[in-house]
Image (cartoon, rainbow, N blue to C red; front, side, top):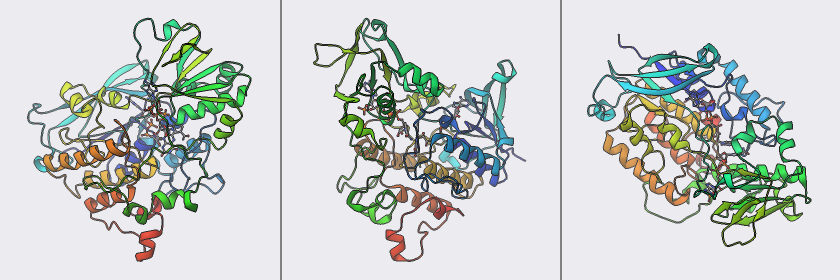
Amino acid sequence: MDEKRVAIVGAGISGLLACKYAAAKGFTPVVFEEQDKVGGLWNHTLESTTLQVPKQLYEFSDFPWPSSVKELLPHNTQLTQYLQSYAQKFQLLQYVNFNSTVIDVDYVGESEEEMNCWGGDGKAFRSKRKWILKVSHSGDHGSIKEYEAEFLVLCIGKFSGLPNIPEFAPGYGSDAFSGKVMHSMDLAKMENAAAAKLIKGKRVVVIGSGKSAVDIAYECANLNGRDNPCTMVQRRIHWMIPHDAQPWGLSFSFLFFTRFAELMLHKPGQGSLFTAATILLTPLPNFYDRVEDGSILMKKSKSFTFCKEGVILEGEAVPLQADVVIFATGYKGKEKLKNMFASPTFQNYIYGSPNSIVPLYRQMIHPRIPQLAVIGYTESLSCLFTFEMRCKWLSHFLDGEFRLPNIREMEKEMEGWEKYMKRYAGKGRSCIGGVPIWYNDQLCRDIGSAPKRKNGFISELFQPYGPPDYHHL
Ligand SMILES: Cc1cc2nc3c(=O)[nH]c(=O)nc-3n(C[C@H](O)[C@H](O)[C@H](O)COP(=O)(O)OP(=O)(O)OC[C@H]3O[C@@H](n4cnc5c(N)ncnc54)[C@H](O)[C@@H]3O)c2cc1C
Ligand SMILES: NC(=O)c1ccc[n+]([C@@H]2O[C@H](COP(=O)([O-])OP(=O)(O)OC[C@H]3O[C@@H](n4cnc5c(N)ncnc54)[C@H](OP(=O)(O)O)[C@@H]3O)[C@@H](O)[C@H]2O)c1
């Protein structure tokens, strides 16, 4: 009988979900995780980091948050506990090899020309073709071993591991600066007390205006107040919505997770209607108070360079003096994914073009890379909810319940999303944004399940959708 081994790289939220749903279909997944515990990036966050969506949306469909967690937006420590409990409850730890870094993956069994045919039969498994994973085990003196699998799921995380650090002309980069320079990822990895010591009494400049930048500026402001205000340098202005905001009196769930709200939105592959998109961020509740009281200063500058005393912003003659400069400039998720592949052809396929999103059918499958799925590379307003839907879909696919369409059809679907995301999420950003139910409908149809999961017309239109609606998928 043909073997059907499933290997999973990463034991963050996506990896745990991929493992759980593969095991539920009778597979024995083998998970490789470079950390010594599950939970992924939630094991290393800033002290103040909380969930940024209400917890009922960031909840496993069959594992509610414990009643002891009263907060709407739980703290990162509550998140790690919740994820560990999930792994224990569904006995997932038995599948995970910790302290095991996958160095690269290679597809063997046929020539690269012959590989172009997921769509040949559209099945998850093909006889005699497999992936070879090269794994370094830090717990075993760094020994390197090879493992085989007929199907590979990459769950390596888009926002961790490989930081995005701006490049500078020689003489204008961090070498010119006498102070300390670091990335938000490294600050998040520090013990809380050590991070506070690094910031206390210092003039801090934070580059970026994403959620990491907002959180760091807020933590600096709390430690240093107006005596040493923290300066946040924004390349672009974002529309930030406070976490407790209720525009027009409507809840977050109603605005983003009802069919009624989606009715008015343009969908991928459809003609343009009108734009209701924005970049949404949920800054800490008192962020604006800190701006008003002068402990956070905001500057807009498209570019900057370093000098001995700090940074020089575009169009400004006087340097912005600093002791510490923190790059909250995000991650190179696409490069990280590309680096996983030994084959240059597959590297090029998965990377796409510099400004493209990772090209994936249903946000999981590359039409020209067989026996492989990627989970976690397209964001949504609740990643856990979306990743769980994807892993459910994937488990049905692995189980042979449906087949993929031909390559052309997959590429057409991807083109629709590419245009949609370029328009609404921004350059190179991949987010299913305002149409999570529309997206889930497609996954349900593939699986052969009813997309409409409420009782009655009114509920279907106006009641927010959440993970429990898809519990039995
Ligand atoms: C600080 C922060 C807060 C966030 N908050 C929210 C939020 O509130 N709501 C929301 O919806 N989304 C949020 N996100 C988005 C977030 O990315 C997802 O919600 C989710 O936690 C990502 O899970 P993941 O498993 O895909 O990735 P990760 O958590 O990054 O896990 C990837 C795992 O893969 C392992 N790994 C990577 N490479 C290898 C390798 N080569 N070999 C072996 N193991 C490897 C890593 O060690 C890690 O454990 C946040 C992101 C960040 C950075
Ligand atoms: N739960 C939480 O509270 C929490 C906390 C932190 C992060 N997160 C999530 O984690 C993910 C990553 O967030 P992030 O803030 O680390 O990264 P991010 O969202 O990618 O934001 C990066 C920021 O850096 C700026 N930037 C990038 N390159 C730059 C350059 N060369 N020069 C100047 N500015 C540059 C970007 O500017 P532009 O805007 O102009 O592109 C952007 O403002 C997001 O999904 C976020 O929501 C959540």
